[in-house]
Amino acid sequence: MSTQTRSRPKSSQPKVLQVAVKVLLDSGTTRLFMDTQFAKEKRFKLERLKNPLLVRNVDGTTNIGGAIMHQVEYNMFFKEHMERVRIDIYNLGKKEVILEMP
Image (cartoon, rainbow, N blue to C red):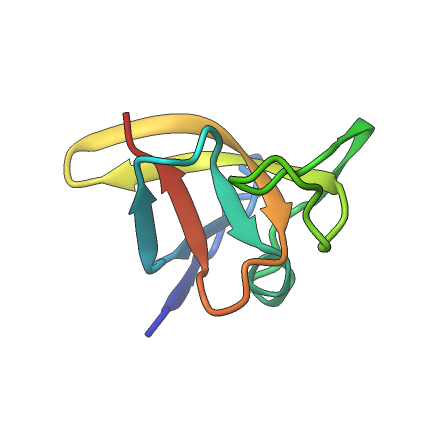
């Protein structure tokens, strides 16, 4: 279950949005992905890509979901670690986020 907590910003600070996410760690992926519907429901700011990214399946065929058209940039936290990341927005179905596992 995902939860969303908003804190009230001071007048000079941007709005802060915290979202808990179920993540799939995938050693086979080469990128970071967030589901399109999840990103919209949680009101992430989608940034349109100048050059869409073609998505290929494991067998080399083009994915029927089409190209990646948007990304989101945000701070990802895990325990005491924080990292600024850019994540591709794509239709993942039942998964909220898929992270590359080195």
